[in-house]
Length: 195
Image (cartoon, rainbow, N blue to C red):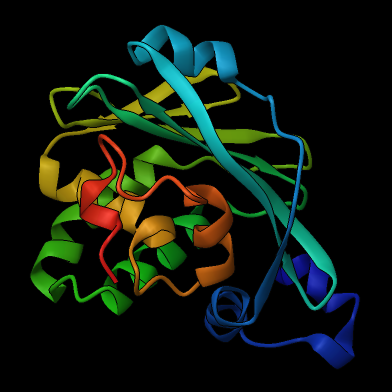
């Protein structure tokens, strides 16, 4: 992203400030994102698509996101993100940790998750996708363009990670609104439905 914005010096910001601004001042448009639906269906029982949206920043489109959940209690959830810009893996991991901090996750816990997150992300180009699937047993699996990359165990990680988009205190409230839509409270999403 930094390389991209260097072409637009009038918009250039340091990497950290840019990503924070992306989260704080983003807009959402309705998007079509059927990317990886079969992958999600293979990993979550009785899956249904809930909401989808497009993340933008000052008119720049960043990614399309689509939320899935199981109709079964504790059946899992998934978030599929199809990127509309290039982002470096290290920047995705770093921003994820920043977003977790804003949600109140401790320094100690974020430090524990830093290496697993670094392994979970790959550099993305336009059209690439990262799909995060919270399995019924509580771990979160990461897929890059439909291929398994890594798994991070623990219900606390899963809840925090998906909270980046779904928690009431998310820095992307418009995206949260279109992802969850009218579906709160909903099986498997109860933790994200209280303001």
